[in-house]
Length: 77
Image (cartoon, rainbow, N blue to C red; front, side, top):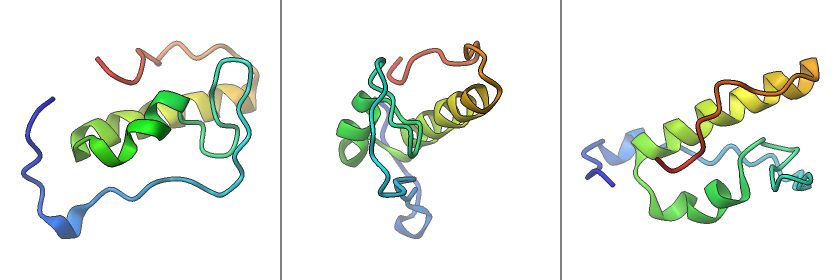
């Protein structure tokens, strides 16, 4: 993991919408983050959080269109 040098006022907030329900693949149907991303949110840097958010956006779009996401490369790489 890289060292986060982002100023504290640029902290990436959690996208949690308090509608937690995991699907069969351990993806939250409220925020579309993986269970792994949710669990590690407080320990990772902002760059990793942005990666989590991009993956979640891709999953959300795929869910709305009922297709399999092709942009998800996993959360921690």
